[in-house]
Length: 221
Image 1 (spheres, helix red, strand yellow):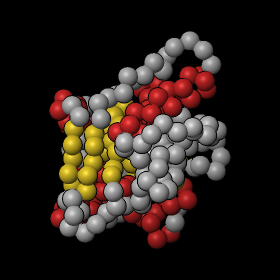
Image 2: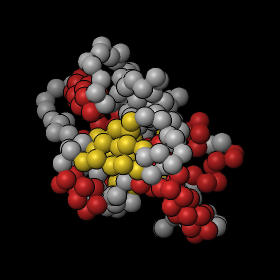
Image 3: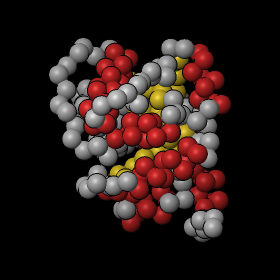
Image 4: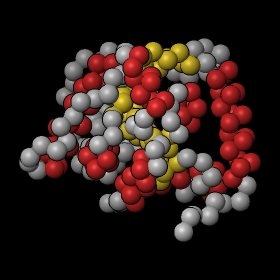
């Protein structure tokens, strides 16, 4: 049975579209592709997009400006369940995740989105970055990649959001991972998460730093 949409969904999506156009004017994007073929991939294929998380603005800015298939964004239950925001999240392309306890609902919903031919965006740090640094990645996002074999595309946002100043976004090439190698899944996912972290750190121009292992396998935002 098809899930019934909440009332006023169309009106909310229309306003959101107008807001997206306004965002392009207020924070005009400057998108740079390391490989032009990735631009075509994002437009034509479903992907798992991973990004650094600089400000709360990222969660609705990136889906508005990045040329791609329909993009669903993961958001923590802490924000998703807020009374002032829940009505909005439920009507737009957001997937809740509970970071306070083990949760697989986010995984099932993500697979459903990808099975439908759409993309998802995940912030692997599980929190906002501090002082422009890139914190350790929680490997949970790779559980989704392992079960769907969907390309993982890294993007990084540089600098702060400044009105009427171009917001620079760098889109990297799909990350080559070996998520089906033999061994303990937790060890494999941790190693591959560190690989993804290193690639994005390099995109940000960061020196190599010692990372603290993220324990929560499910944390993605």
